[in-house]
Length: 483
Image (cartoon, rainbow, N blue to C red):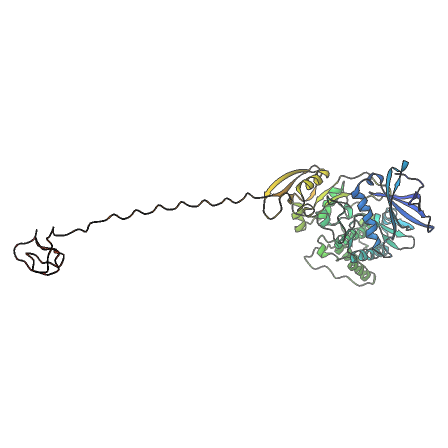
């Protein structure tokens, strides 16, 4: 959109175009009410109809408005107004402090290597700005030379909090998609992890490396390749004329593991102050993830030429798991940065999926969001009673993917009801025992009596004798033996 000269909000008169970016244009303008020069950032017309981009643009105003610091460009106002022919076009604009100077990206394009002392001063002031943001719970997430303004008075100001994250803010998108710049992206962001203060420290370390080496730490044909380098590669050594203490500063800021970096902007600023005061930084412990930059042989690397073809590679174990399909947190659309004031053509997108952004949401909603990113979705039903039916339990793979890839989305379904146990049949009753006659040994006998028997030795039951019987008496007979 080229609005020319127009009045926004009946107050801000647009003048000349200063710069363009991924989301909008920055214009020199005049505040007709206070009669002062200001900068007006206009959201691109193709985005004004998208509630997500408008919310992100509004968030930049909200995030920056709570940060009062001399190294953060002040936001004065935010507004939305009708524009275009017949007032049919919706405009969203941000009014901020006009910094008379240039972006660091323009400075580097002109000077290539600003020198060690000037680099340290730029790092110190930028770290101070990040310290204020981090203390307020705000993570910038897109620190790069194009967002660092260097005033003619030497004051450095950071700007563009459009994709910043705040602990108190509402997510800007339902898909979890944010825009970042691959050249300055921290490894944990490239792997789909959550950005923290250490992510801003890494980006500022990348800026320091670029200022000292005269070139970016990593470069490639597209954003995907560059992001993968952030995960696994180690930059080439800094030029030989960079002091050892400065090497330690940049090496620690560029550690692959956030735990090995300076914790936040305040810690980075304190370390820069130590270097400026001549206090040596503590060498990294053996086995830590802090990068060490040995002095390069000769000063050949100081001319800003392309890095050598050989580069050491590392792969932090936790990040390796993510690349193999582990969990992460947000979908990140990356672009390669350009030092040109006018935005270049879009680079191929790298999508970094983060499982935490999708798990626990309705499967139909997640399928629609992934489809909008150009990904194919395969639903996988998973029986579980731990998650409500229809909610996503996992996505695979997570981490770096490309448009067109297939993503398996696991979602909960209720397990089948338990089968009632069938009672075992009752055992058949045992048959009553049959009466068994008592056998009588020695043949039949006449009942005995209490007197003497005819024959045999009787003992009440008459066990012997032909006529011995069941008498109670005992008798002796001698007539003849019993049969």
